[in-house]
Length: 161
Image 1: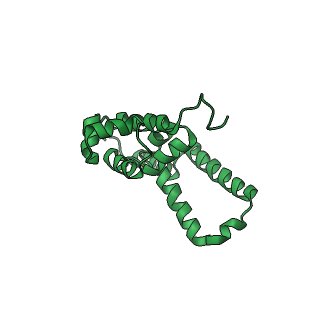
Image 2: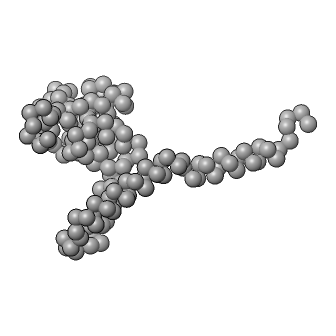
């Protein structure tokens, strides 16, 4: 399916669904969001409805107002998944990825063009597989704390002894 497929939502619809999802996730009204963005409610309503051109300034203002991730909002539109931005609101995955990409761009500069597609694909797939594996296996720091706390509790005398 191409982006020209009439059954696929356009960027405005995807952005609209993304913004609504995040605003509702943060339990904010349109008026509260508009006020936090310092724009008129009518302007905000048009922005959230996807009736305006993609406005990076508004996306960054929205992200600040809703304590979400501006880069994840843009990625949500790019991958056609409005839920992606909500999923990344707490951990700022979109911004982290973008910062890493910026550092990589600075490190390699024009040598980036010498990387072949297979190498890039393999590295990206490996990165995402490692992230998924880490989530499935749990947080080693949290596991360590829980195990250590259980050991300490086991060594303490029971109340009343």
